[in-house]
Length: 256
Ligand code: ADP
Ligand code: MG
Image (cartoon, rainbow, N blue to C red; front, top):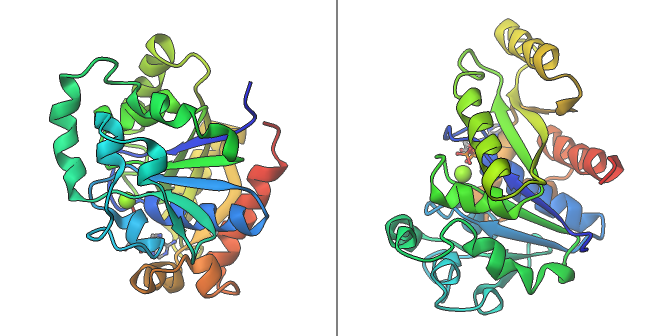
């Protein structure tokens, strides 16, 4: 049995902090001397760009890997800025959804592709698209744990039941070991009463499934992607970077 921890970063809502979490957690775990692979599974390719890799110039991407056109090792690149390995994505991936439907083992193609390199890593993070599509199902079939970033806003809980139902379905049919790792509160504003209220609601409903670390709203986290450097490296002292470093510690401290 491999001891690699494979985490899918999932929420079918866009703009909740999935990519920011994937990139900064990858960099923070790498800073802690862990061997990390980040898989960009979103056609927007934001995790790729945020890792300092030009998505338009990537010779091979996760698209070819999923379709069986190349090995994962052939698509893998190095994020020099982040200190981790990356399987990039770009808009090519948008077509994969339709093409995958025709292929055998369509839900487990990422898992099969990853198997051979799994032993090289302590952590594999998968940045998912904003949908519960076949791409996300591939991530959930591959992962042991799901990290769910949630923005502390009024509609935060809406849609969570769909996500939980999808997780249950994947657990029943494709991946019995799948569990929720935790809910991560993102873009938290302590001065905003609603933000506090939603945050408390999450704790009341989900108890210890909520990470203790709160990620504040912080402009450094939003700026860093335009420099192609994870914020934890670009401005390590910023509140946003500190939060992701704390999240990495929390995850490293937790039992496997
Ligand atoms: P998703 O991947 O879920 O669509 P992103 O991580 O891309 O979400 O975040 C959406 C937008 O919000 C991006 O512009 C990102 O830079 C910004 N952002 C994410 N987290 C924070 C934060 N904690 N503080 C400020 N801006 C953030
Ligand atoms: Mg994203």
